[in-house]
Image (cartoon, rainbow, N blue to C red; front, top):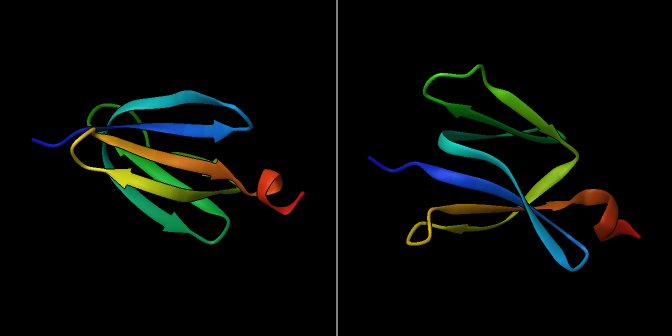
Amino acid sequence: MCQMSVVIQKAEKTEKIIEEVVKVEIKNNGIMVSTFFDDPKFIDNVMIKEIDCLGSTVTLLDREEIIT
């Protein structure tokens, strides 16, 4: 079974947001992530930078940091 961690990259650091993610959905202004046991979580104003299947990580970027 493939479960991933979702991290967000801000400036010079990377912060883990959620672990054991089984589904990622792209929405209008962010993404919806789902795990086995918790309710889906919407992460607003982000975009996917990278999906690393071997490292089991989805890296997000904050849209506000890209614009500025």
